[in-house]
View 1 (cartoon, rainbow, N blue to C red):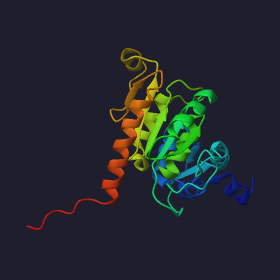
View 2 (cartoon, helix red, strand yellow):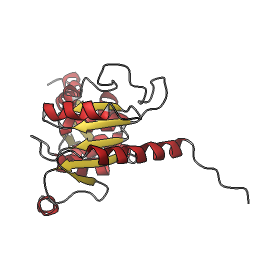
View 3 (spheres, helix red, strand yellow):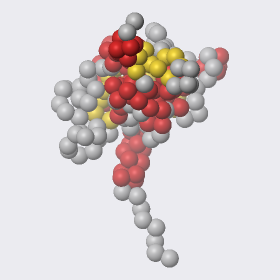
View 4 (cartoon, rainbow, N blue to C red):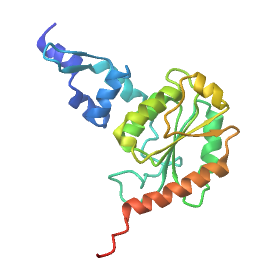
Length: 219
């Protein structure tokens, strides 16, 4: 294989981060947990298999950066307009995704609702834009909600994202599957939209505070 072929087959973590639109730290995390395939050179540098990067890009949702109705999302960085609450819903049942969208889109703060049907697609969205709230099921094919939430809890991009799991599992079932990070709020099914609205209202208040912090009184 020629050197040019090798260069095309692999990329550095920085190149992978640029292609995916995430931080180098997130790429390193995805390499460590197997989301991206990579190997180390004799000098200890990671080389990411380009096909695994392209596969992850292929799984990224087409709805990213758009409302459910298709309008440009003013809640994302780089897009003009007032800041709006953004909510990412992760659910492999298309009927439940529609139910979420129908309810959340009618909330008073008119949030941007992004719907994806896999944990991998959710990781890409979170790595790129870090919505204010993530709502996820725990049972999903492939990577499940447990593994996704554990990864998100370690990603620096999610520092201000409220993580919520909506599940039919009880506390004992969750613990038997290894538990969830302490930062995750767990709500029972059927989907408790009133409690989710309470969480959204708190997120709006916190977002306003971060944008307009109260200055300390002069001493």
